[in-house]
Length: 425
Image (cartoon, rainbow, N blue to C red; front, side):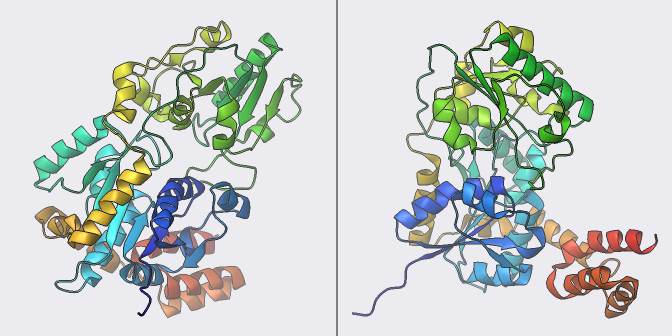
């Protein structure tokens, strides 16, 4: 008998956090016999070799946007970890490229961490996919209300939780605190003064507890990039400071460190959920107050907000049960398994919940807006413009010509703006 080709899955990511989100889903798909390929949009790649390895991948494939759409159409499953606007663009392009009566691939989307901003816009950008993997019961209730208000089906919403969390957190450790990890974030806090203040309070904590190892885990190494770019790296800010012997900056992936950590500190990182999952005690630094720009407003009900003065005295809280249940409750299996179970159900039935969304007035208006943006102001860089840029130098010429040939219209306009600014200098 002829061999049957394995079902294929395309996973799309552009940054290390998005790769991490894909990793668990990839593992579950491969365990069920899917052949998996990881693709990065050529214009959005910000991944170092080390970041790719740390996320659990050997390599990724760079593809232009048209190639990525073609690859998606040839796949059985597409797992899109891109940010909301790019996810919406993919669902729009697939809606127009899928032939009449053809189901097309099962398109999966979700959020790579706790949602701290653009909760409505983020949901609507993902609403045109077949499986919208939702992180918490609170988010699910909000999305259902939003869908009902706009006349959208909510049949694609799946309360899965984050793919790198379990469905049953380990019991909280109660022994002596010996190892403390601060999970840094690239843009929280944003200013140099605030970041330096937090780092130096952490150093003071290390001096106060010389018997404890205090580890500062930056989001990325100097020179690397993430979805949110760090302007003030701790390695730069603390250069020249006298640091205690029990304080160190360490880039070991947080998933490797957490099983050995007694207390995790952070401002508002999703790492706090990973720490809880691993049985770590958690404190969310409150010294700068509560504000949307810090992202800690979404943790008001967590029971974990603490000042450094409280943290130094080991006045550490425990997660509020109702808040914790929102992220870990109502689930009997890990997120990656729930997501792939749903994918296989849709492949078996041929049903595509996205098609119910694609025909709605809301989605059609989004399509019209995207296409209008493509058309307004000459979305494509013209050959004449590329010639002008080449006259300015080989770098600008290469950027202009590459953009003209490779990029989708939605990406061209900001590049044209940058090129104008540079060429006018």
